[in-house]
Length: 334
Image (cartoon, rainbow, N blue to C red; front, side):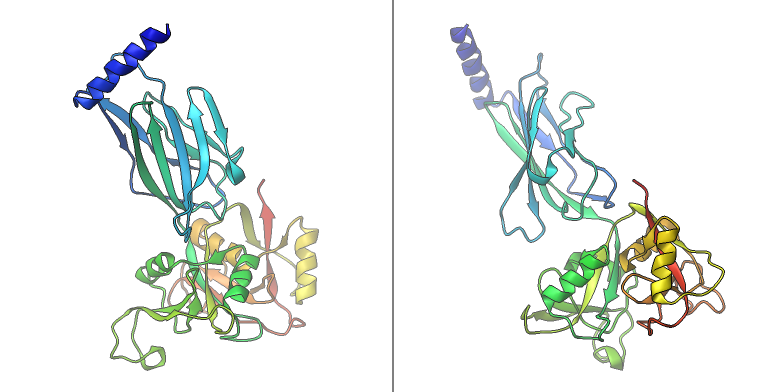
């Protein structure tokens, strides 16, 4: 038997070497998804010419996180029906295998750190081919500053501030996409790569002058401990429901948080409100407390007495917590 197997392997190797059989692996360059949902990263392989009988292939998926500096991490290895997943991907990944040659990776649910470059590698013992696919989150970028005021956060404080609001520091690509979508903001904020930048759609004196063209303007890489800016946060989470609590009276901040708890939820975070506005179409012309002590409200359809003529999340900043407002609550769906 061993002699027969060796003979077959030698014959197949000769066929490969002679160019009669070639392995092809294909995948799209980029896949977009929403945090908290699931995603399928396509990967298909085939042979030219087609084989008369299937081969026992090994499928390996690896992942390089955003700003991973070249380091790849194993996600899953599969041979036939046997498979093994690794690290934070354990229990969240599987191969789709809808048809012969389908080695697509299914991730469910998506977590906030799952973005990056994924490599699908197909090994049949004779040839090794791979392809990469970039996983991006569809989401919304929003500017954020400290309750103490503007330009008061170093990089580490900005990163923590975004995470507390159910989001994370935006990448340059995410800020650039937001600028293309109309985000116009004069205050510079930290990004994930350690730079401080800001998007300008309409050049004006208060935003660097009218001589500069529209675009994302950069202060370059800054000292992460000493320099202080605001932050640009990115959220892509739709894991729960955000709603304006219908309450008979206005509430101070403490009363607002308690009212959400009494309703079976908790007071919403800024990132959750932005996600509800962006993905669910939450439109509410009522100012309400949020978990960070700010007061905001989301508008899809601009109208009289609801702020500016553009859609967005309106902010009243951080008013004294004894003042009375409504409240936005959040309930987890699962």
